[in-house]
Image (tube, rainbow, N blue to C red):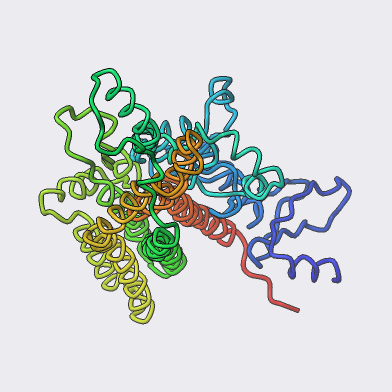
Length: 479
């Protein structure tokens, strides 16, 4: 009796071969149902743990779920460290050092190979903001010797490479100012021309340091405000995608109340496709005469949408909706139509309302992203910041050249790199979707909703097996 009670409490299928001399039938419990098996027979082994393991095994075989079902903030299989798109609506993860070529490849090369829609001129060769961080990357980010490492890798910096021309031009301009008195004197002597100012030197062109420092203070205030505004836009863009992931998970969780499995799958697939459609809208590409030009940074979602949506006609309908001018809105309309059909099939009205609210929030996240991509920081403010910095740097040689001489040239080059670099970083993050890891974020959505789809298929197998066993013997009355 005590053994049977333990069997009833544990809703797991227990399979074992009964001894040949045993006259008592073996009792097997399936989902809190006890089922008699023939003497000496072995029942089919099934449990929710086994179902989960089997589901994960099948999902991994199909490339559906990551190795250990981790979230986007604690994995090392995401893009930037090994993520790549899978097939048939799921995301397949590859390890970073999968091949010898990948071992030697830089982070920039890996990112661009996995996410061609990234702005290639803004991706550095080291750890980049275009990948999701894990603990190893955080450890590298806060390492003690980062000061020396970052100093030695200045030539590899995208900020340095983009500012090399203006910094070199300012250094050359400073060199001309330093050499100006000597050149004028030599030219006058060679041409035997009497100068109206025979004692001409840079001391006569010096600017008061106090006046120039006031201009520097003004430039600092303008630069700080410009950079803070850009960073706020970057954070808002990442927050919007975080909210998108959260609401997609809510839809996946609440979709279990949809009685029609076909409609449930369609809903989850459309929500997954929406993420890729939104990514393509945010990376619509730059105009180029050659469509294969990699600097166009164009994101084409056709492959991802066909992979996510298993109904070919529905996938083509989503892709062809680009002619409407708003493929994201059309996808949301299809989601609402699916929910309306689910409501007619028996979906509880309160659950329908909750799912619609989550879908509305998904659209809100997309709207925030569209607002950021369509409306920059006021252009006049950006231009005024650039003009103020250039004026400050152009007048700086007249302050330091009289005392530093030729040392002013490397000094101006370094100062230009440091000052203009701050503004350049602000420009880079002002439009965050060119550098944010959108493909890994879409992969997180695809993975999580794929888990819900795999769980739905597993539950169907579990119910079918339980019903098959229930037909063989009646339920045992609890004692």
